Amino acid sequence: MRQYIKFIVAGCIALLFIGTFVFLYFQGQAAPVVYDEFTTRYGDISKTSIITGKIEPRNEVNVKPQISGIITEITKEAGQMITAGEIIAKVKVVPDMNQLSAAQARVRLADINMKQAKTDYMREKTLFDKGLVSADEYDKIKQDYNQKKEEVRAAQDNLEVVRDGVSKNNSDASSTLIRSTITGLILDIPVKVGNTVILSNTFNDGTTIATVANMNDLIFRGNIDETEVGRLVTGMPMKITVGALQDMKLEAALEYISPKAVESNGANQFEIKAAVRNVSGKSIRSGYSANAEIVLASAKHAVVIPESAVSFEGSQAYVYIIKGEGDKKTYERRNVTTGLSDGINIEIKKGLKIGEKVRGPKKVKDDDGSDND
Image (cartoon, rainbow, N blue to C red):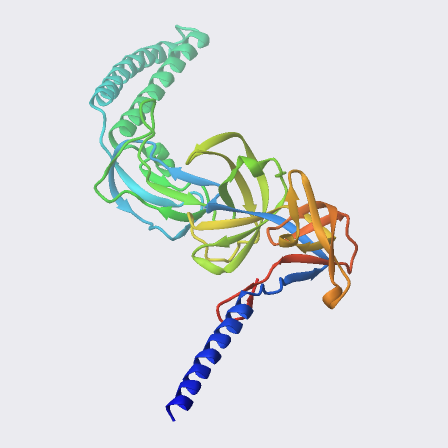
């Protein structure tokens, strides 16, 4: 009985050893290499560039005061439409003391001259009425008197302008009333009632009362890398996607390419501008971030294959043509001339015909046995 047990145990050990050997043998066998296969076809390829920038009005105007003073009233607010000539704010003048003194002195002097001219005129008129002086001499005295009266009115107007910012004779064109110079949308009113404002002069730009822009005439402004700017020409179409309005797509036309580069993060960038079309009635705000897609080059109805099927050695490109079927399948190396690539597909200008099959990259099996390219 013990002898039979020994034979059984020995047989089990032998079977285990043989099974392990067979398993390791088959595991050690190289799996057949399998490649992706592609068929050449006609297709359209385009090389595009995405440019980051922003949307802004072409004509954005800063409305500034014509006099220095204090804001006493603001009649508009940001976001409202305004027409050219409408009042935005009112300013109370704070006169310059030197100018005020000079204007007052001018009034006093003009008044003295006018009184003297009046005395001379009345005396001359009496003599003229008695026939003691000629008409020519009388007319000269009368003209001088009229001129002195006009000088008094001019001096008084100047004093009122210096003191009050407006005179009785030009109240319709008062510089204390800040008016919009264009028709458009008020983007910003950076001042408040009580703020002091100054007019523009040689030493400063003056205080901005309001910023007004025509929001129906917008442009896209962005920068493009120097490696791509050489392919741009004015008039090229662009597609604009506004970051805050993903569902809105805008059309634009390139109208400006900067002749000078600016350095940005170590790279040379060129500024571009494009006119945005058909924006009337759309709720677009100034300064929206946007992306512009522009087609740098394109190939229509070209022979294309996936770029992964093309191998490169220096300046030479080649593919492997599939010959035969099944176990008799072979691969023939062939040089090709490539064209435009979009990063996925590539144009074959020479070396392939429509319908030919080419070898792609090797398929790789995952741990679960499924194929993965």
